[in-house]
Image (cartoon, rainbow, N blue to C red; front, side, top):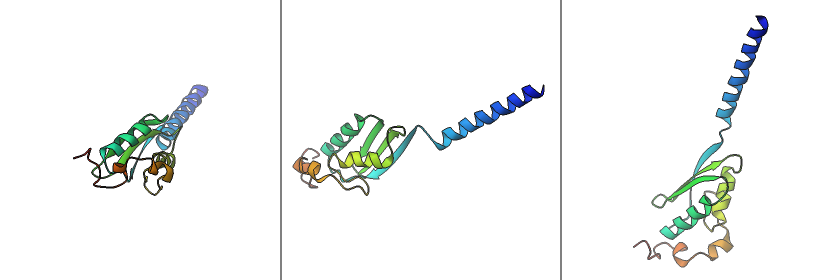
Length: 120
């Protein structure tokens, strides 16, 4: 009887430990940050780049606020890596500055506000 009681207590402890570990270490997280995106072409370029990256569940950019929301798998990525990925496309990502070479390869409309005719 004592053995069964001990087993029950042990199982409860292990189960509650696993549950608390899951809460403190989720498998996915969401990060939001401002970008320097200015037009629909920027939006398409950033979202496409991220959405085809291993570990990204989804990426969605709101052009009005210039805020991107990215859900990512914590096994593969962290928030800083996500920002780095955006910077490598040629855009500022929060406090992470854009990659200058990638920025220079962007179309003119993605470099200067008010220049993009696509959004008119």
